[in-house]
Image (cartoon, rainbow, N blue to C red):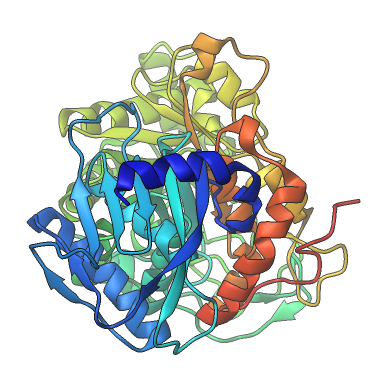
Amino acid sequence: MNRLALSLIFVLIGTSLFAQLNIIPKPVSAVIGSGTFQLNATVKIVAPQKDLLKQAAFLNEYLDTFFGFKLSIVKKALPTDCVLTLDNKRQKNKITGAYQLLVDGKQISIAGDDSEGVFYGIQTLIQLLPTASKVSSLAIPQVKITDASRFAYRGMMLDAGRHFYKVAFVKKFIDFLALHKLNNFHWHLTEDQGWRIEIKKYPLLTKVGSMRHGTVLGPHPGTGNDNKPHGGFYTQQEIREVVKYAEDRFITVIPEIEMPGHSSAAIAAYPQLSCFPDEATKPAKGVTWAGPQTGKQVQQAWSVYNDVFCPTEYTFKFIEDVLDEVLALFPSKYIHIGGDECPKDAWKRSAFCQQLIKEKGLKDEHGLQSYFIGRIEKYLNKKGRDIIGWDEILEGGLAPNATVMSWRGEKGGIEAAKQKHKVIMSPTTYIYLDYKQNQQEDSLTFKGYLPLEKVYSYNPLPKELTVEEQQYIIGAQANVWTEYISNPSKIEYMIFPRAAAFSEVMWTPQEKRSWPDFQERLKIQLKRYDLWNVNYNGKQALTKAK
């Protein structure tokens, strides 16, 4: 029977059986046949082009890790092989990564509009594999899937500033994103509590700024202090390694260098970045402090601090030097420059800042922040890069080419889209994965409550926008802030299974999404998490939110 005839049979019999395919995110179109394909060590992966070798390697690594065998990789196809191809003639999708997966009794075929599409086809194939480990022959259902993503930007952020995570876990985190068809890794690298990226021109950033003398215990402002040094940073070589690892999984790494607020660690290393370099660091009210209390210090508690970058020529030269080294490490189009939660107290009492406001004809300190962000944007634009900033960058006027990441609800994103700026939705109420999943958690979390069903209910396209304005919403991002997450196991617990819900929000057409249907498919996904040996929250994974 030829493959066209088989496809017709799929169309005739497959629609009523779609629920049997436990794929997350749900594909655009999927039908199944009545038989299976046996995947075992005799099957070969056919990768006729060099561009497909990384996809073949990913599949092989997965098979070896969980089932104990690898497939030979060849250029020429046999009738019983797993064939990877680029179908450049299609190119019908505005968003990269479209693919078609066809499995019959004799062959697996994955055809992508581009290399990224082939990779996503492999992620879908992985979800057709058994969830039991070390099985020598894997029965895969006959299936025809045609698929493409709803949004171009599908991201997740890891905060390495509050707590440092080793490279091995960062790579594992990237694998989690890849397996859920997410394509942007936002790496939060600088904070009040730690500077995590090596900058060779400013060695004190890591020698001083990467280490705090202690960490508060309990919810902010804390019930005490552990009095234990906490530090760590990524060398430039390690960052190159992570970026390459992500590229091989079609994930863009977007670095965040916070400015002008959340900058205590940098100021501890170079006090002249402050408007008041001779003033000692002030802990938040009620915080039990560990170590020295004189001079500038890396903060030990979770709060917003008044000591922020002073917009002097020294500061701008420092930031430009830092960004030059960042740009050499990260080829991403976007550089995230923060811009959030910058108190204006220091600027209000700084004679220099007040004079600068007059010289530049600015309205107030919010205008000064806009000037600060705009100057950095111009510098990065000259280098061929664009900025992303949290929605506070709207205050005082939005920089001309900025992309807004809307976290304080959707208001900032709506405002930016109406101004025809690109928007990445990231509201706390739907996709902040540091919020608790259960009303009663067994460990400390942020106070917000975000059950699985609410994550799944999110639609990143606000009704307040016209169809034309909605086109400026390029996607959304889930965030993992780590004030109360000090180890990798807890990160896994906080993101799973909510990452599965978020992936479907980002990938699957809105009209094809169904919470009851997702719950059924999630049962198998949880078994796959068991296979991966990841820690996940199963308490309310399959129950409705109250």
